Image (cartoon, rainbow, N blue to C red; front, side, top):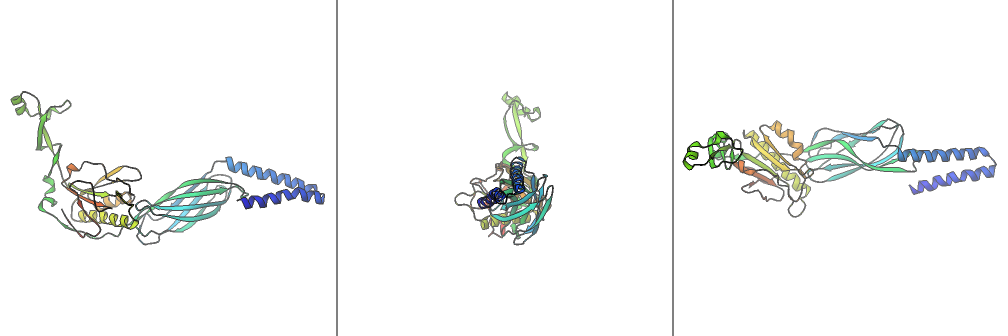
Length: 349
């Protein structure tokens, strides 16, 4: 940029000298016009709102190791041309934290657009999100620029290479048995299965009053109903990094194990709840899955979980009879949770 300014100023200041040497007033007029145009271009570029937008068109999903083709569409919504735009397309894997930068250089006509072909690649599974970083938009003369970052609409989910998991189920964990299980530590709303009794609290339903004990004890007693633990399998994705930051390979293996176990449970006719904590939004995510189609519907969220020091989702585990956890660090703080890893090919329920 400094070199360009020096060359341009030498050219501009040489015009008056040339006009004096040749005695041509036309050169002075040209010098005045060029100076005015230069100032006008810089002022318009500096104060005119930047109306660039970026979209990445790509397949929604891709297999790990593939190189899907994509298009970056850049649009100029203003009437001022962008003679030169220099930027970097940042491709970030939200699961593993990997980032790839692709340098870009292009020009845009007023209210014009351009399509730039891209070749994307990811060695690990995860959701790839795009953004434009360090974008420099130069004025028509290329003497000044504005720097700005942009979001780039679009993304691609790189699928894990799942593997079959052999399920060894006890009689308690069989699909037929799940309909009659009840949580042992939490009350619910199934009156056919009593959970316990307690004294009346303002707001309790009169339907739950235990009249026989009330008349016997001389105070209102409430009968608590049971909480049916139908399909009460909880599958947790614990992406906590308790010591060192997990490697991309470790994140890939954990996500693969998590999705593989969920697929195997569904194939065995076992609906279950999956849960994780999103490191980017700090929100706990929890979904009941009954089919593989429902699993595919939330796969992007699973593969965007990211890592953080404490990524255990906030939920009540007392309502579940079986808890399985897939952890990046091969340990979990979830009580009574059985650990499952990418090295396991069998899981006991």
